[in-house]
Length: 258
Image: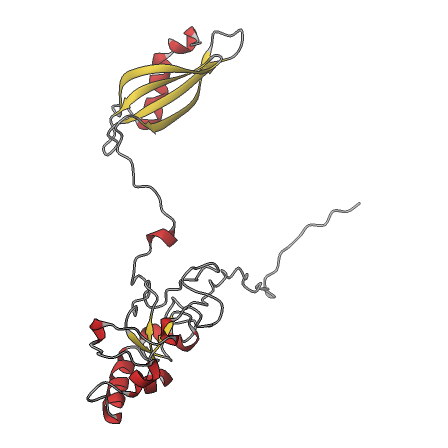
């Protein structure tokens, strides 16, 4: 039931709301609702810029066998049609592909479905012979090793061509870049590295971490970024500074006599 004394305390509730919001920022009385025995909440329109649809809620109460009504709390609450901020999302859900920058560190969860312990090759299509694929323009299904050796292609990269490509790619994503200098480890030990075939395998690979700025690009094995699969967040340092002892300051003290 709505306590009559609490329901009639509109002026008291209005004064409490204006004490918090300021004169002129509290609008008309919108109603009152019971909250419990001898407890009620009065609602007033909020005349605050940017708070369309919000209301001031002032909860009042009175003690048993007392006619004196007092204020419990005053808060600003959303009403029907109130403009609300977007739902808060944890950082792991706010990340977008390529968000990792120089010096950023993105630890990978232990149960990340993109990674598995070690390399077994059990579900790696590269361990099997490729099937007929028109996009490769292969007329015959060749074993993987034969295809890497160049069988079925009129010409392949020469030694000079491979070295020129390796030098060019290493300059873009190599150990001397700002990103690599701030990385916790190198690509050669990262689970997101997809090695290249043939001679390139010794120095280059392709990044497969969608959050890395190198995703889908050729990287040197000596490159690295904060999205390394084994990255671990560094604990915050809580070491206190060394105490300073002033050996020259003196303090006088008065000794009492018994």
